[in-house]
Figure 1 (tube, rainbow, N blue to C red):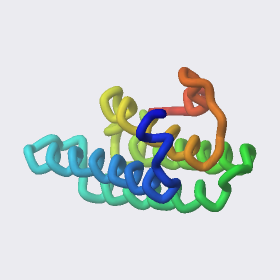
Figure 2 (cartoon, rainbow, N blue to C red):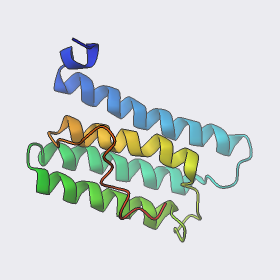
Figure 3 (cartoon, rainbow, N blue to C red):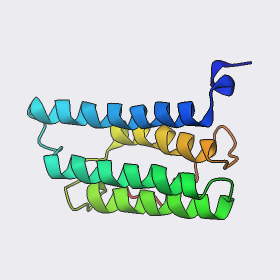
Figure 4 (cartoon, one colour):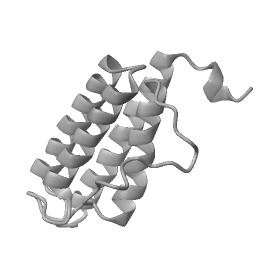
Length: 128
């Protein structure tokens, strides 16, 4: 049995929350090193979206339709902030997407949504 299977739901959510924080810390470090694509307001706005996502996904747990609605709203909100025509510029690019999507899918899986390993329901409505 893999280690992840032995973790409690609370432990899994803590790891996922730490993953989100790790992503945001990398963005903050990049901003501090002069990467102008990441603004303080943009990063904090994404933090709020991800915090709301985790809370809403937990409330929707074990209800596939509700979880997918939470996921689609989160993806939409991230696009509004940092997508191709985002409020804070196009700062969610390939590298950021490769970090965010596994995190988002990990949260919804942990809340009870069954997905195939290669399945990505965000792909059809992502603008980032």
